[in-house]
Every structure is written in C-alpha cells, then in structure tokens.
Length: 116
Image (cartoon, rainbow, N blue to C red):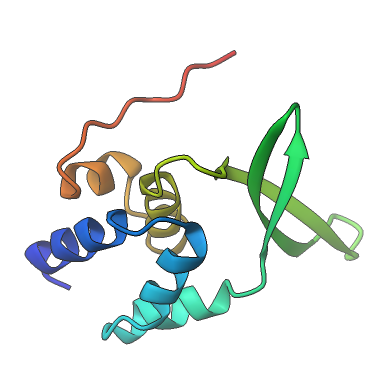
C-alpha cells in the first residue's frame, strides 16, 4: 500500500464512530492483507466495566509455558474515546506500524501515554 493510500484509509477510518464500524470498514478494504487481518479479529473484542469505565479489550487465546491455552486480555481503549486509538492499535498489532505514524497519517499529534 502506498503512503498516500494509507493516509486516505486512516483518515476515513477516523471519521467513523465506533470500533465495530472501523472493523467492518477494515474487513471491506480492497487490500486483502488488511481485510484478512481485520476478519481474523472478528469476535475477539469484549467490553467490561472497570472503575466506572466501559473498556474495550482484545481477548485472545495463547499457549502458556505449560503448553495450555490461556485467555489474554489487552485493554485497547474506552467506549466513546476517539477511534484513532483502535486504528493505531490495529496497524501496530497487525502490521508493526508505530502509533505515531498512524496518528501522523491522520493529521494528528500522538502523545505517549503517561506512565503511572
């Protein structure tokens, strides 16, 4: 995918309102790698209320050191937050594109999360 095509895609995804909408748009992408990567994530997201926030998690099964399947949950973002967070997570997780580069493609400034 050319850089200008990537920018166009990221900007169009950022105009959507929710993670399900972004995931559907990614699955419908003409780039088969992107569409297949998005399709492989279907059904792997859960919403949980933690500390009064509706958090979106990516839930996957991975093999632990004993060779047993274990469920892992990765916090992606909160419901209602800007979908750029999900878009950046998707391109990093699936294609090793840095969050900073995704934000830049969207014409936005990336701020490193503060450490607690």
